[in-house]
Image 1: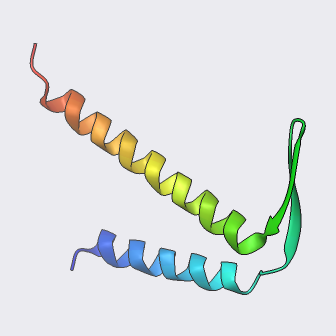
Image 2 (image 1 turned 120 degrees about the horizontal axis):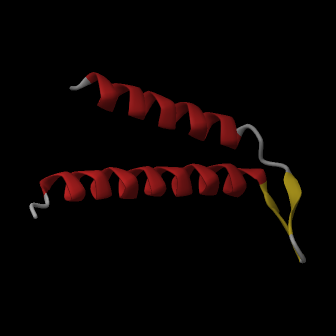
Length: 69
């Protein structure tokens, strides 16, 4: 396996373990919106959004680099 893959799996495992140990309910406030939810969902949701943004940026860079004018 590539080093990047091993590090990504290790990092994801650490995030999952960390989030499972922080399972209390907490309040989330954004502008006029307030929601009470588990920290597990907040942590894993934030991590998932970060992964998706990283993938989209990576795909965009590959697409722009392969596009010929």
